Length: 207
Image (tube, rainbow, N blue to C red; front, side):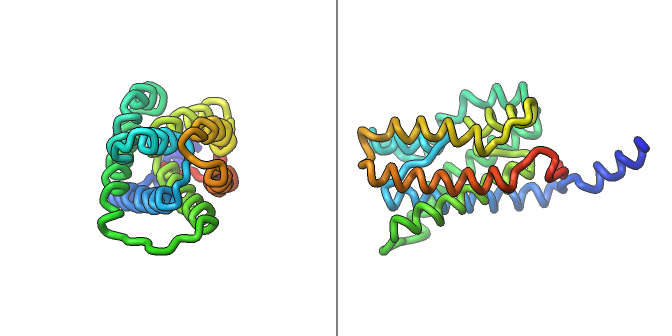
């Protein structure tokens, strides 16, 4: 039985090529969603939302803020989630920071419906995060915390993220008009619905 279980476990392991493809695809999806949120003047949750707050309040580049805010969380990731998870998360965060700054030079959006930005951007970010989660990576920061809580206590990552994100959105009121906060809530609902529905303990066993 143990040999059979080991063979099944090995058969579901991701190859390095699959991990590379997932890191590139997941961060690209998330960066496209962030670009829609940013174009519409919206906020997000997690360390992305904290970076948005810093960007709106100071005018500093979003990518640099996102990269810097994630630095303190890597210690938790290393201790709680392991070396492989931490290394892949560092790569994902770096790619996300770079893509978020590069996309405005590669992609021009002249017309954007705010409602589409909220729903479409939220689904893109959620899909990107889901791809990363399933390859044992994340966008760092609070994602690391909620993933650890899900793995150790069985708490749903999507629901945990939702509560933390709500606090971040409320903190944006001094810089973001309340109609954009409302749209941001809709965007966050799209992100967290994608995670809560599709990312459950035991549903996806590949590592």
